[in-house]
Image 1: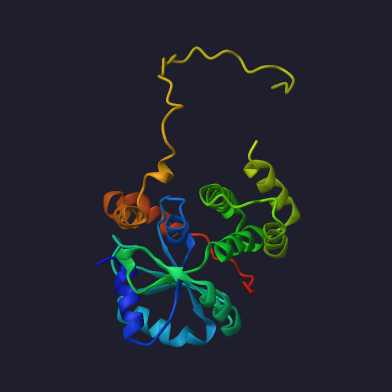
Image 2: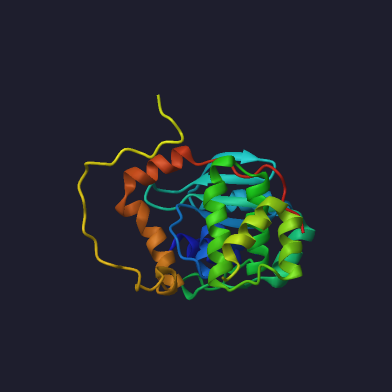
Amino acid sequence: MSALATIASSAVENGLSFLLAGGHAVIAHGHPRNTFDLDLIIRRSDRIPWTDLTRALGYGQHREGPTFLQFDPPNPRSLPLDLMLVSDDTYAKLAAEAVPVPASAAGARMVSLRHLLALKCHAIKHGHPGRVVKDADDVIGLVQANRVDVNAPETRELFLKHGTTELYEKIRRICTPI
Amino acid sequence: MKRSDESAPRSDGVELELPDWSGMDESSARVDPDAAFLLCEQYPVWFDEAAARWRIQRPEKCLVEFTL
């Protein structure tokens, strides 16, 4: 069983919910690439039960911050786990638009394309500078794979709300069909 | 000293005669998400040293909370 399937079934057993994000969601939304970790979004209020669950599954805490928890895998040949913490309100909005994941992780749900783009824009704007190239490549790949209309007002609004004007203009130039 | 207005010197390196691959389909359209998920789980098994290096260098996550 995959790490994601194991976590998904354990979360269900323990009455905990999560949404798949990060590289796996990028893959499932049509831009296949490699990823060396598993990114899940959880409610901040579920932080303690999730910490207990990961410990029970053999994960060890790697790093902790106000907005995230990072865990090392039970063995070096499996994927590390990152939990991203959001408010109950934001989680409810993400969950309302969430979509099923591929069959190999049955039972799990992942963030919608629109919310995945918002998360990527947020990471580019506020995240580690070393991640910008990878996140920008994800945005371009997702926009192209899903034929997102970069000139549509709602796309512009999303990029400006969660990213920057510069990012939006660059993506628009790159992704506008000639 | 390098001068920015000059062309790079011609390389005497190996000259490769490569075929035209421009007609190939984009790989992202040909990889099933389930297969891609499986491959991601296999990378740390196949490339354990690279995966260990990546784990150590894993960047800290974004410190600003995402809100909708």
